[in-house]
Each structure stands twice: as C-alpha cells, then as structure tokens.
Length: 212
Image 1: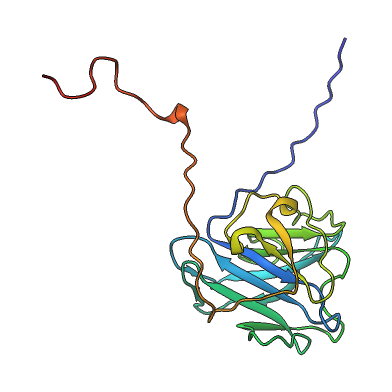
Image 2: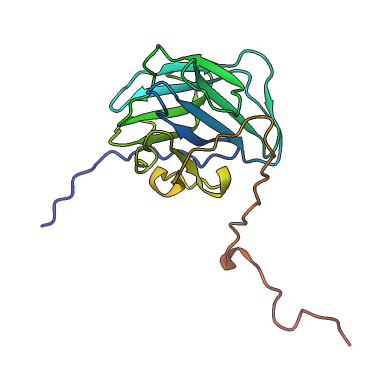
C-alpha cells in the first residue's frame, strides 16, 4: 500500500499590494556601496510611519535593522523611495534615508535577504521581501534571485510593478544599477484583472437583448 507522510505546508505570503522592494544593490565601487529602492505599486499613497527595513544573512533567523520610520513619510501612488548606506553609497541620485554601513557594508556579496516590515523587527508583518544568492532565510519568496555583480542591481520587472511572490521570476539584472528616489518620476502600475470566464454570469438564453 502507498504510504504518504504528512509534510507541514510552507506558509504562503500574500502578493504585495502596496510597497515593494523594487531594486537593490549589494556592492559598488566598494563593498559598502549598498542601496534598497522602494516603490508604491498601489493607486493610493502609503505612509511608512511604523515600518522597518531589515536584512538577514543567508540562513539568518534574526533581523538586522537598517532603517525605521517613526514620523509620517508618504510615498505617493507610483512613487519611489531610496534607502542607502552611508558613507559607502556615492550615487548621483540622493538617498531619501540612510543607514550606517559599518565601513564594510551590511549586505553579503553572495547571499542574503531583505524585507520591509510593518511593525517591529522580527515580528512585524512582512509587506515584501527578497532573497538573493544561496539564501534560505524566511525572506525568500519561492526561489531566490541571483546576486548582482558590483555596480549592478536587481530590479523588479516593469520598473517595480510586477510581484508574483517568486524572487527568481520577479527580478532581472540591471546593468549598471539605476536607483530612483522620491524626486524621480512616478510610475503608476496598471491594474490587471484576475477575472476569469468562470466568474462571468451570462443572461439566460432568450432573456438578453431588447424585446420587439
């Protein structure tokens, strides 16, 4: 007889509907030239007050806080927001918020994970996350994206509008990296309907049209 053992189901995170991690770089001219770009893919403004941007090592189980927001900080619909290391990041696009890079950077150049939480580190609701390289931590969505080389980044498809909760499919290499900040032009995401033919109810035969 066939013996099937029960395997605990892996929790499935809902697809992000507000703010996503739209681009990230793990190294540039130096290992400390790091940035994370956020994008509001919704049709309404989102306030980051109470949110935390965090990092975990490849197999890490504890968040490393990068930045947190304790005052109203609104990303308009379609808007971007740039978080970068200081003094390591030296891009011409200015960071909206910075974190200390510890002289050698916070991100691994081979594997790791990033997440945006609504709430406290370790326990706040994960709004969006990405795992790269050989990471196995809780921030990986389905499968990791590959790690970008120095001065390159990984960008979410459609300039930050695509989210299928599969990091491997959602991100592509951007050479060279091209971060955007709150002063960049907005990119309003189009809404794709999930309506299928099974969701449509047609009038009964003989009841449609105009009676003569």
